[in-house]
Image (cartoon, rainbow over the protein chains, first blue to last red):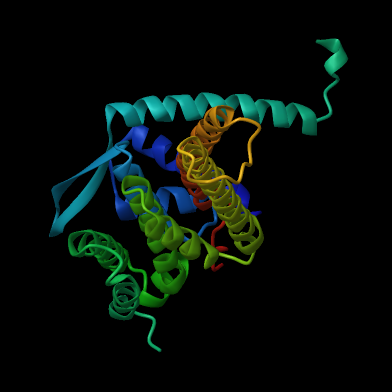
Length: 108
Length: 197
């Protein structure tokens, strides 16, 4: 798939996964690359940007039989952003799908 | 070259040292080494993990650009914005046309407006001095119908020139802001490295 498509939606994907649960980096990357084929390395810089913008925070948590892992969590403003971007995406996707499926606008 | 964790981290470190502050760099590097170590406990090899992360050079480039754009946003300066623009160019040929060309045009435009402002101001100030000399009777050579009218016209010119310079300053600030917005959008959407697979 086109790289621009993927890159543009990566942010909402990350926000959305984090809206469901706090994740450590590897977990988040796996969740996303399971469905979208993207250079996994670019997700970390994105996480840093989201942190800079105040949408996510991090905390360390012990893991079973290993060093503590860095978890990412959405902040209040991150939740708001996720909600807004999701709405926007849903509307956009619905319009594009309608166009691609060639639905007749005259009927509406 | 061995595609393993140490090498990946080493390349990232070499490429980013000097650009990123130490704590930030360490923070980023720790993310990648955590990624490698968890991946390996999950049974993946160094090579597999490297491949799905993408080349460390590309990753470093992306982090570098993000950092420089952020820096230019937080600390407005000519040096910072130029660094950010130059770094963005490294992300792809596309940006040569869609970042560098508009940026140069804007800079030239601002410079020209500034020069015009300076010239008008200079002309105005010269006019005021000239008219005063005329009123004082020192200079017989008249450029105005009346020296008094000359003073008013010249003061008007000076003010206009200064307004042009001030306006240009705000225009510059506005373009700086727009430029940052555009670079951020550019990083987010346009440029990027294709997945390795």
